[in-house]
Image (cartoon, rainbow, N blue to C red; front, side):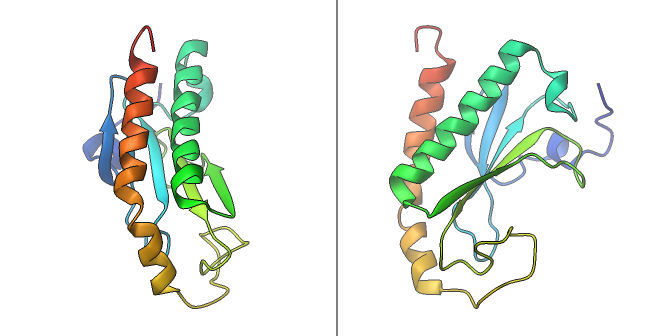
Length: 149
């Protein structure tokens, strides 16, 4: 296991908390221009996905899938991007990002140069769907965490 000393994701939620469970949490990330941006963060400090047991990896990916499905259902993006980089913050977390043809960076990664100006009207339409999206994420994760779920 890697050290948690000075780890930003050990010290804070890493975004607006949507759901907190025994093993992981889901947060909504306030990133300008990307209203459908979430992180699935493993609660214990590990840097690599391979540090988890088979069961823990399955639970982590099931949570990523829950978030992805909610984004697809509620936000109807052109694509959902999944990434587990950890270069800047070596604490296991998955980026789950709803992408739209109108977003500033589409089709490129959100961390690259912008391709166009922000579409604030379209962003507002997405933001209006976030509470329903969060409710579905919570419901799916509670069900997944329940032994009979």
